Image 1 (cartoon, helix red, strand yellow):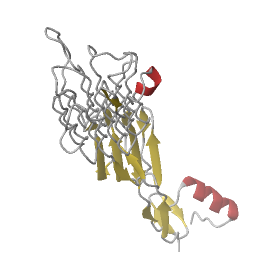
Image 2: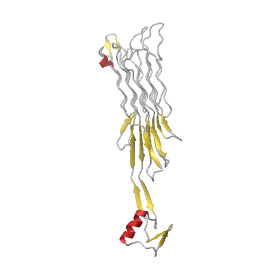
Image 3: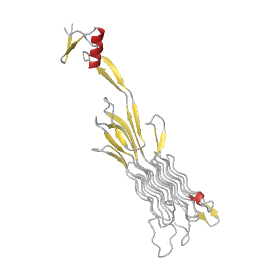
Amino acid sequence: MASSNGGVVGVDNPPVQETQAEQITTFNSSGTFTAQPKTTDCNLLVVAGGGGAAYGGGGAGGYRAINPHPLPASAVPVTIGAGGAGNPVMNKFQGSNNGNNTVFGSSTPITSTGGGGGGTGYGSFPGESLPSHAGKAGGSGGGATDGGAGGAATPGQGNPGGNGAGYPGTYGDYGTAGGGGAGAAGGNVTTGEAGGADGGAGIANSISGSSVTYAGGGGGSGVNSGSVPKAGGAGGAGGGGAGGNATTHTPSSGVGQAGTANTGGGGGGASASGPGSEASGAGGSGIVIVAEPAVDYIVASGVWDMNAVYDNVKAGNWTNA
């Protein structure tokens, strides 16, 4: 007996269960995302660019993991935030640069905030006008210098930067605080003669199919306090750059390391006690990962696409009766 198919008549086509496979899409640079036909929601990771360092470590880029997140059938724009720039020749009169936002979507966008830049302005003489010792606010906050406060974090996206400590004398060199990370605040400096503090740890996420840690804070710079030079702080797990060492008076030892690309890690601080030509670390760029789960669906009885009609007519299995 023939059956009706919305105007196309053919033999019975029994129900068939089919599966749309899981798909993971990673954006290391800006682009456009289009979901598979059966996808209605996804797991989503959005990490912003990390903050650039000065002497204090840069804060990590904002970290957002959303499970599940609804997806439209139309294309979705993706903007990957660059890390904040470091200073190629650091001195106490220079400021720092925040990282840039990462955005998924347009009409109802998911936005992660760029990491806060590190504090600067060490050891001022009377009458000098210097940038703020405080770390800058961001997804995670930048680490402070010389008694300043760590930068504030964006709620739900990260942690504050560490607090600085002033030198015990009128002025001098000192260690600086670490930038905040997605999983922990940046390390504080408890005395002006301490070494650089560590950046805050990031958060591990397995959305890509393996565990990767993102959004670590940058380490604070080391200090040459009298005859006892100190090392810079370690970068936080998740791409944070290490702070520059003050163990020798050479530009190469005092350079702050950049945050790792596509992790949102903060940059490491430049040592304040070398010859004045050390570079501070740039923040690492952000990332977006979209994981579409597998979807089972039924191809209904009696429904044929045109390719199936052609194949069945050619095989002699189709009737117009």
